[in-house]
Length: 307
Image (cartoon, helix red, strand yellow):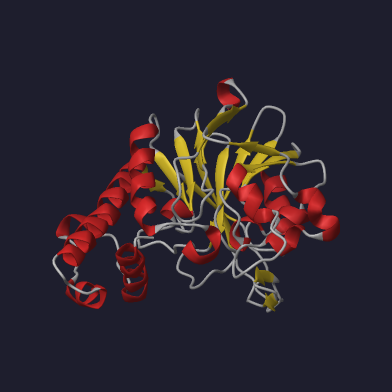
């Protein structure tokens, strides 16, 4: 993979993020373009930084007639995305696919040209179209005049856009991080973009309360994705600073489902969720995955509650 570092502004400029009804400010992040394959790039954050920074990774796919973006970061980064696209190609941005509704993956939608075709899973459109928003849903971004940025193209289980070297396959395998997580396969590039179904090598944030996500179904959805996706080598994760490989997704499914199985067994044997969390350690075969205490406690709590 060829790394192309593109400098972003480092000044302390406000970046508006849709988190409930309040505006959050954060330091501008340096964005980095990584060439993943021919005509496919990942626009991510500078490695080694902390926190949300610019938001989720953006896929930039240069097709024969236009550019397809997958995810658009936090509000305020739309023009940065456009600028980096222009450094790669002069073809227009024609399509945006959002892996899910969250503000750090769809925040830049309203800063892109009106002619863009937005594509999401049908459940994600329902989340984006809500009258009221909690936490990270980002539906307020599409109220009023910005309703014109709501996606007009949706799918249920699987759909394909383009053909030949331009082919992109979209999959929905079930609930997990939210109830509308889309997996994107750039067929010719042998690459999958996972959104936050595989954000990084650690436990996920599960938007159970507002995004209709599920700790139990997260593991089942990972298993379905591993079984249902073939012919890929490379992974553009939701937030990891560098691309990963398909075997990492396979191992992630094993790591997560091992926790689910162990937690269910512990509960059946009368062990409390707190006791399980205190006793848990990452198995050696999954040593490159992190089980942060807070995330582990939250995940196990949902499992014990059957959510």
